[in-house]
Each structure stands twice: as C-alpha cells, then as structure tokens.
Length: 345
Image (cartoon, rainbow, N blue to C red; front, side, top):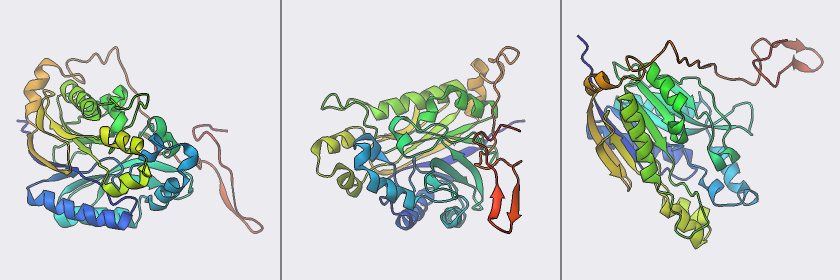
C-alpha cells in the first residue's frame, strides 16, 4: 500500500545582508535554527538569497551600475566551494533539508554568474544544484543562461522535491519535466521586488498576485504542494540602490513580493506572508492521490502516444570533453575549445 509522508515546511521571507556573504551565511544559520525550533523539516530561502538579487538592473541605467555588478561578482560563490560547505554544515547541524538561492560564479571566468538554487539533505550533502534556465528581462545584465542539469525531483524519503526559480515557474515544459519525473513537493523562489513598468507613478505590477497565480497553476495542474519563498530588501539595500531617488524607492517598495504555501487543489495552505518572517505548514502529501483521480497530467490524463518531451540534462562546460589537453614544454597547456559544445569534428 502506498502511504505518502507528511512534511513540516518553513518558507523564510527575509533580506540577506546586502552583498555580504559571510554575514548572510550567519543569518541563514540563525534563521534555520528559528525555523527548526518551530518544527520544520524543510527550510526554503528565496531567490539569490546568498547574497543579493541584482535589482539595480531594473531601476538604473547600465552605465550607472558597474559598482553593484563588481560587488555581486565578488560576492558570488563557486560550487563546490567553502560557502557551499558552510551551507551543508548548517543543514547537518540542524538536521534539516535546506534550499537556498545563490549567485554562482564560473570558477573559470569572472564574467559569468548564474542564478542557482542549492538543496542540501539532512546530512549536509548537496543533492540538487540547479541553474536558472533563462534570466528574465533585465536580469540578463547579470546572469548567464543555465542548463537542465538537476531539473529533476529529489527523492528524500518520498518527498520527490523539485525546484524552479522565479520566472521558470511560467515555463510550461520545465514544470512538466519535473512533474513527469514524479514531483510531489515543489519549491518556487522569488526576488525582493520586480519593477516592471515605469510609465506611471504607481508601478502597478502586482508581484504577490502574479506569484500566487503561478503557484496555484502548478499546484492545481500537477496536484502537488507548492512552497513559495521570496527574498526581501532591507533598508540598507534600498538606500544603496535608490541613491536618494524617491521614484526608484517607490518602484522597489511598490513591487515587493509575498511568500505562501499552496495545496494540490491550488488553494492557500498558509500565507500570503507580505513582511519578513517564517511561514510554517504541515503538508500531507497523501492528498495527491485522490486529486489525481480527476486529472493526472503525467499519467491517466496524458497521451504519451501523442505527446513526447525530451530534456538534455547535461551540465554544460566551456571545454568539450572530447577536446584534447596536452602538455607543451613551450607554452604550458595547449587546448582547443569549440563555441558549440555539442558540435563534433
């Protein structure tokens, strides 16, 4: 008999210490301790929580943001790396599954940063390492396109935990890829603000409403639970980015996010949380069984004889693994790299 577990989850809505990795790691440790004291088995942080979302891309001209870009690259982490080890140690110390959004730097290039999400199990082992498939709009000034490596749910004792970052939750094929591999518990992470249209003074982009719309769609279509965790901006970040411009400050404050937890019927289980805090809920994954009797979009309500989806889950590298790397007494290492890693000579 199939009996699915219940999971006690915590969505953390908080601000990192702006572009300060050591201080933000300490803050993560404290917040995880607070969440586990409330019974959480899974603790979820928002998009690029370590250690800041490049919100300046949305409100400053490109020629006015080099200082922020340099600071973000300087604070971006490598995976694996010491900061990754610290996150694993936090998960292990609190015996909790931990999900954290990070800025990840290519160790081979100071010009490439990815928007990544890391999931650690209770032992501190990194079990899922995703890079956002496509940076959204002005995010492309900072982040490179990711890949589909680890676009899969993690088993974790029946949880089947999957994660998508912000706008990926509108990517129908990415969502279906997770569901088709058995996802039961979905994590959706979001930024601290989303200034979208400056043609009026009201900035009428309703980020909490749009987050709820996306989360409810995935929950209802997939018959899964969805845990939404959003990052926020503290006063330090607001002041530094706004630079005493009231219009920019209004844009950032007016488009703040919300965290929430939804059930497989698309309805709210907890939240929305619109201020800094921790949202708790106990989720009975068994609820998917009856819900899927009506619509199981990867099973009985799918036509696999008509529709097929293929996903390339290889992790991309600048060097083709078939390229040659030889020692050259004169020049050190001699290698060739192809612009298209899939091209074969």
